[in-house]
Image (cartoon, rainbow, N blue to C red):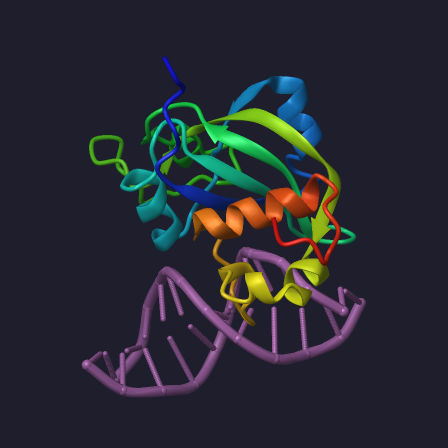
Amino acid sequence: MSAPSPTNYWLMKSEPEAFSIDDLRAAGRAPWDGVRNYQARKFIRDPMKLGDLALFYHSNASPPGVVGIARVASAARPDPTALDPKHAGFDPASDPQAPRWFLVEMAFVEKLAAPVSLAALKEDPALKGMLVVQKGQRLSVQPVTAAEFARVLALGRGATASATG
DNA sequence: GCCAACGTTGGC
DNA sequence: GCCAACGTTGGC
């Protein structure tokens, strides 16, 4: 039996002061809660599938960039933090009977030996189509192509900038 | 439906 | 801390 290959690849942003790759590694897996953007919700709720792989991106970091790999470890389900008045992500308009916000659980896969900074992503011609390098793009859950994912992973595992594997 | 005001994101 | 860019809200 070979392991099923992931059907989609993603980039998921988190501020390291809120939840870092080290936090995910320590936890093993964790609910990816707090997504409050309709476009990101659509990705989480619809095309995101168990086993999909994601680039774990540190935003508001020094430097910002891809620091690890995570795997989608659950189906999408309603995000309970949207219904919790004590939670920063509380949405008073959210209806428990018709959940508005969703989460998936993410599992730790790998911390990159050589984090790939946003500047490095921008410098790589092979990655010029990535959403994260586009000006003004702030979507917290983004699709990436298999080729982009493989390229970032190669860079992050220590491949030289001139390697094209 | 338009669009100004506001709040947030996130690089720098 | 600054501020550009974006998304949402709400008056009209």
